[in-house]
Length: 325
Ligand code: XMP
Image 1 (cartoon, rainbow, N blue to C red):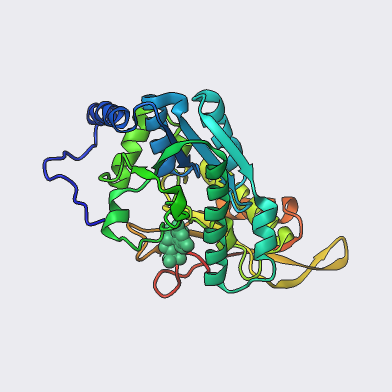
Image 2: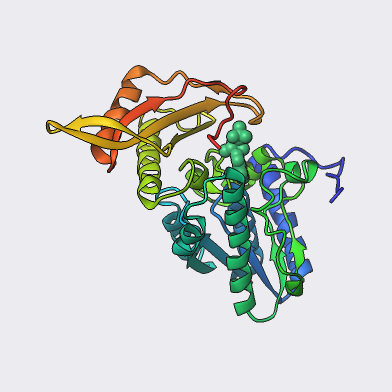
């Protein structure tokens, strides 16, 4: 920590500058790791994906990517990681479906900070177990970016696998540690990663876990995942993808009364949130056209199991935070 971006470093904002950066980092990675193997926790987020693509370019299958599915990812995310890295880039990819393990540990836990601790702690445990199965790994790659160094207790702390057992004793490979987010995206684009990966909206490490408010149950978690997929699909159709900073759905832990086929129902409510922001410290509400909202509501109440009500959250940050917990 305490490292500083070199003053001579140009802002990477063109394909040419990105190519030069890629070339320089590929050489640096080769020089650092030689013939050794490198381990990486690949979440599918922008930073770890760009690091993975850089390392694959430099050392191919000497990089061992571990994708831990904690069961709190968005619909289609693990599949995309497998498709892009496992198939298209021929990465040495280990996919661990730890859904049951995470959800069992989280059962009955409603305190948001306890939920975050369990998710972060369990993530490190699963990753360490996979690391121990690999023989002779000396290096650990991380998607640390410059804002993480500047705010060293940043929200992403558990994304980077700090807190790994000491006996693993890895040397770090952090090729994008002096880059700002926009630069990471330019580099990712030049490395050929799909736009969906490079330009995706911020997504919290604890994933849908903080959007399934209170104690997570599988039915409510599925309602969050399915409604989020509909929202993203409809925002893309309406041209809002890439325009709105962050948009997602939340399912609170209480039911309300509805009516279906002449019978009373007692089902969950989905809350839609779509906000604009510069750095997440404050946020304003996106004025989503009524027709778009209306279509999303119709789809959610007909397609998502166990939901009979949809609301749109109009609260800015402050006083509300972006996430619900
Ligand atoms: P809030 O809810 O505090 O969120 O207004 C600000 C930004 O941070 C993201 N966020 C998190 N990211 N781990 C993360 O990696 C977390 O525990 C976490 N909590 C919130 C949130 O999505 C928003 O972009």
